[in-house]
Image 1 (tube, rainbow, N blue to C red):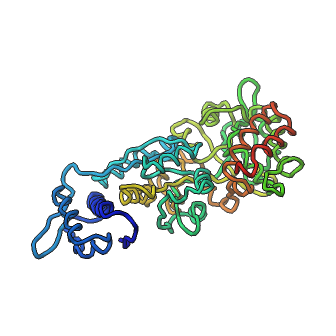
Image 2 (spheres, rainbow, N blue to C red):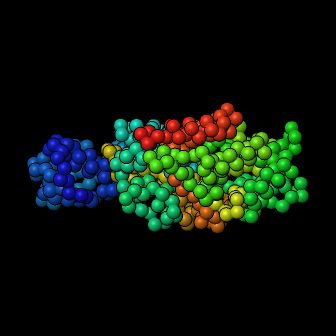
Image 3 (cartoon, rainbow, N blue to C red):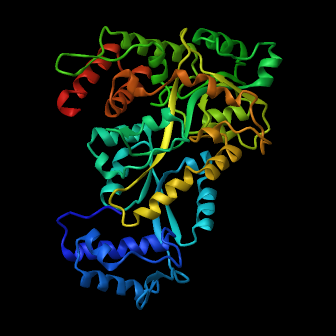
Length: 459
């Protein structure tokens, strides 16, 4: 326990002492039968008088959490029946299926009967909700993906997050993405590269070889046309409009967005504009590529035999759980150098949480060997812990033969930030591209709008 040297009032420091001890006892950090440090020790740690410490301990005696034994000390005797602390967890609603989060929380509460978890669905698309929940103290633990975290840092909100111990059992490339100034602010939970998923029976019936790591985009376009059946089946389907999809093609060019001398994005006449133009050409060469689809629609079309190939993630493969479908996966096509986009999701603890110990304990459980192995064995999502992601054993459900291909593609994992743009710029560009690719804006208008909207003052 760190020594307190803040300017808090005596009443605030006393409340902190009581709340801290209460939480430590209710969460099991201080076990029944354990003796507390002396009143003098607490007085020094919380900058209180011995008399104030004694008053605080009397509160916990009255709650039945501790017992004072004359000439011996103060012993932990609680928590009494029915006593518990509540941790409010904000989670992306999609992980209900992607990680079976509610079953995981049930497992946690069985092991920690004195902690209740209140699960609150949040949006993964807008950081503003997460920021409001954290700053107002509504949430104790919050799920954040890489884009959320980048927005948090760009807004200067990293001070809202409690630094955590780096977990050496988690893939280092996942942990590194959630660090600021050497501090681990988000603990990785699940991850996925973008992948190609396909119906094996369609390829066999057409006497076509299945996709492999040598595939380039021209191969996908060719095979898509050969697999498609007019008015019956699409050769390829993908939501190119998603900010988790279109940056892939730009990343694969190896280029970055350029800027004017004043810091504004420069698009006209650049390599990135060439790449965006090619994305549009791809969309028109495969008309079904992107039409503003809903979440899980590509996977549903694949399951029903209405699409032969889709670009997806290990997360979204969970829409195929229980489907009677012979599918497999392959690396996404490329332009000559294999590369894919990485999706990374983890948990952060609110630095202002009043139940911080319990909040940290929840995050530690969700990233523990037990919970991570549960994710691997019951879903298609990839757990952040290396030993769990690479686990080999008896499978409980159909597993694609190439499920472990992610291990071989790790060197090609990239984030949108490798394009030299911020999270806010990504969102702004995404909105403009929808108009451009739909044919509602010319290339000149696209370039001027992006350069005008993303001025230095707005960054």
